[in-house]
Image 1 (tube, rainbow, N blue to C red):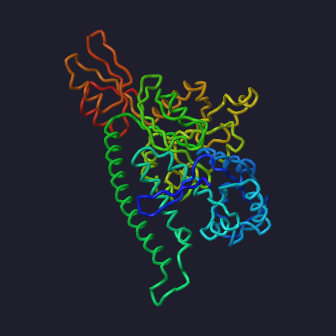
Image 2 (image 1 turned 90 degrees about the vertical axis):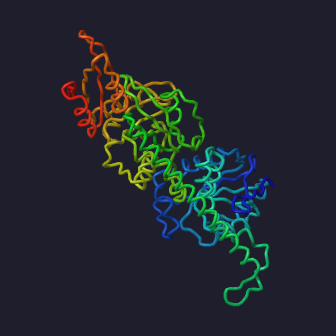
Image 3 (image 1 turned 135 degrees about the vertical axis):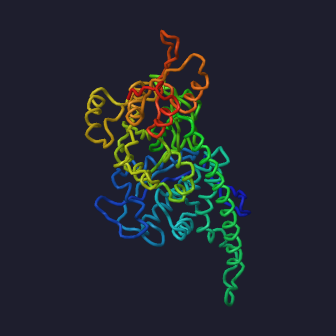
Length: 463
């Protein structure tokens, strides 16, 4: 058995899945036109547009993202959820036979299991069982590199673990019971662990509040600098980090792997006409992203809320591109970004190098009809195709909401030139025939009046 116990910060222990563990990935998906009545089935609503094969393929990607050895995979058609085991008795028996025959150590269920369902399936399979939430938490735990990311993942994991504490103490005596609030040693240990977890979660929340304040100060200082913020968002593995590297020449990890990037990264980028922006790469989204992870990473995702432009990077070559768009927009809505109304959103259709010429020719006009945010920009972050168009589109979107001035400065006015560099976006400058320096500066509307006051008649509004 390739499962080990590791002591966490809370003093308890949790199971760590090691690489090369023999794994079965099971996809319990509802049959077409089947509408589940159980409340637990709400997690399936966002994924209903996907084919079963595509959903299982994504689950396999999650398993392989941490090096699990997938020796078997199976789609299980469902008509309803069983409260005890999620699956029907026949499916449970069939999977148990497969687990035994293939000597499987771990079963990944691509669904959300209750603690009772998880425990009952482990008994039936005689193997470790984790659900989709547990798998995503495991991946995030391995990807986090910064202290902030580690805190966010640990908080989400503790919230998940808290409801499953009963599974860790079934070996203790629980028959004796007691009177009033007194129980057997099993209950006592469970309550002690629960208190430890709650205390640790409270400490992490305080630390994350500090992180939130620090990020707020950073955002405030960036707002003082006149460079606009452009944030990349999108489904995991849509190519955000590859695009980020192309635009910034940064060394951000970019692999054909789900959640290759977790910690946010910011870099300065010079656009084709000389304007500068701060580009932010964020964690990828996924269908059925656990609510606890969205809450834990809110401090990081707030970078998106402060952005001047939000680039929604889509894998246009993926068969479920439209379903993925729906998932991303649902998460953006939960963060306070309303995709249908937010004019900051721009769609970037990535991986066009994977399309044939006919599909590529049809993509542009189709995109104009389908996108509610104007014509999408079609690019290939891998080959560099379309990146000039992307830069021009970003500049055009920024210019539409900003004011451009031509400021004439005397050669000796170094203080004025310094003020412009600190408070405006410098688009260009040249020396005129009279020896004066002419600076083309762009500012947000709220900074236009301060610039006019500072330079009076020396500032001419261009646009």
